[in-house]
Image (cartoon, helix red, strand yellow):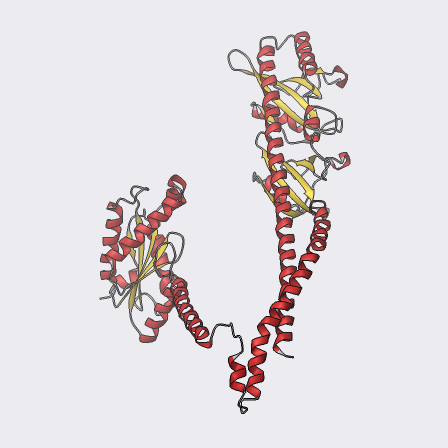
Length: 519
């Protein structure tokens, strides 16, 4: 194969690979955009519906609270109680039934009266919780005596002296028509989306398929998070083994979780057809590109072919003239050499930078665990004794929570600077955790290390660690081989001393007793 055919084959292959890569990348980008948009849309809708449901519970609790004030002065007048329950039942369609019960959970009045519960003592979960708690309550869904899956919403009734008389309650039948049912059902279905609602026991309390209401769902990551009080969005495989794009939010008043989702297959259905159309539209441009590549390959190969032909006839007198006429428009070999030298120089620079980055903590500029391991290996090999100081910022989480993580980072940077000021240049400084540091002091006795630690502790205590004002540190000290001949164990011993300093009140230095006892 000559150079022209080789270049042509490689460039055509490159063009085809680039085209395929472009189409694939475009497909992946659009696919991810569709998924992200669907996740965001479902999360926004679930959040909005959760807020609407929360408003509904606030509204009905206000209705019950007002009614509780009204009936408190006439709690022994059964006709008045019956009229009030009827008014509350007919005023809105928020409840499927209304009941007033006394402190023994006996029904004094109901609406509708067809329930025939007056005089009965309720033993249902909602009634017993309401009587025992004596506070506004939204119960978890449960099966009533009539076999309905209900939510019991109650408000205590107290007399003018604050004495508990009973409660006024409204029940919502989750499988029946009511305002809450219509609120949850009034959302879009045309794009394949739907939603469902679960309680704290993973039980479906609303679902487009009414027969699934009341069933318990396991193995659904969205439900796991939403009943834990986490709102968010994610791709999941639901309990029916269908890939879904779910957004979810919690209803604080009831602890319910609302999940809005759409099958991923439905979301991506139109993308395949779109990519096929893109491919067909790209073919004419691809054909023109291939012709242009063929022409470029011919132009590139021509001078090299002429030079190769001249190389075969170098013993003939006319060869020099023929080579002279070759139109060579490439960079000369010296330019290639310069480029390679430049590339080698840049490569060495990058290697040195990578080596530095591999051994340095990017936030504080101190060493990392690679630096620590390298120093330990060297000192063990050379039998160099050393003291180790384990340093930790006291209540650092409070700094992050109060001032933010950016402020916490600045505190760590200032601490690193003060550590360098209190120690020697030959000492090894490492950041081994979020706010935990190690200082290795070669050929340093424990009492000297203790002095260094106390100096550092006082410096940090008195320093202005803006924006966090003042912070303190705790320090644990061990020595090798004084604390233990085991090199790995000496670091754990320093950590144990650090934890002892924490337990004894923080802002202190603790030294391993074994090394203090040595002469």
